[in-house]
Length: 444
Image 1 (cartoon, one colour):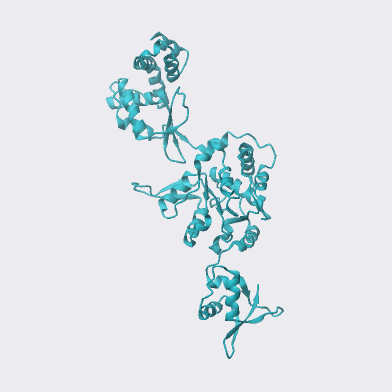
Image 2 (tube, rainbow, N blue to C red):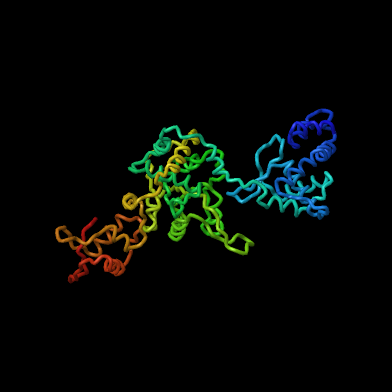
């Protein structure tokens, strides 16, 4: 009792005082007795703190449930640090004065252990009181991404983003600029920026042979402290999983991007432009608005991965010419300090109209054309008055398409090719010979 009183007088928190006492070779023989003594000695001060914190003014007659709820909260705050992870939506805890100071998920089993421990100390603890406190705003609302950003040092002025871009051998002429836009947009997404109406819509797409280090490079972009919020598996078949992914991860790598179908790329185009997410959680009664945290990056071995021409402005196709340096020695603090500095300085992190046109043109070689009309539009144009064209037979047109596009079916009927050539968007001249139809075209 005297030790507990002295610890209280010295302002030592209850959990630390108990922990230190239990390290003593004699006093640690009855852990439950030590805990009950400290709880008894500290209870008056803790109840006073509780009343001051919650503006609680006891009446002459206080319902027993109110007293028990107060004692349960005091017990939990005295023995545990608890917080709600805003990315995962999961409550986490760590025991005060414990060797393991990592936060772990507050599972049902842990909640039951807390209730039993409180009961053993003589509290009339109920599961509902423990759960009600844990699932309330009285525990810390923890944002792991922004908490990490808040601790960054000031940027030292060195261009760390350019160094990161140089790790990827590529002939993409604007790769360093696009990477700067993307990383600054990522920080803006985390900071819940109102400077743009959409999410971080730009997505680098690393295109190269297998084994050149694309996926490993993606994994080292986030600092070690945030790699729990990196994901390289996205379930396009489940709408709820997609919505949760946007709110629960800081970075998603769409690995093997070429495996995404045309319809999935259209869905992805919508996801990239979303600044927030609205959905009804399981067993929920209403649709709720959730923050989007995630930015996207992608990798593929396929040289022509884009199948949706209207969405190509969202992707930065980066052809990888050699081996990527994926050594995990990035100076993450200064890399993101630079991105944060650019964001706070009002640096633009989205493409203007001219830059969008340039990007679309740069992405054209990576466009995978499935539609016959698209193939013809990419292969031929109608000659103008000052341009030289020639008359093409359907057989010659079919042969050229087969040589340019591996996915073109050389058995495509000439009638189908003719119908595509007569599409209203082309306005090609044509004539009928004694043998077949011919078209006045110029090869691009």
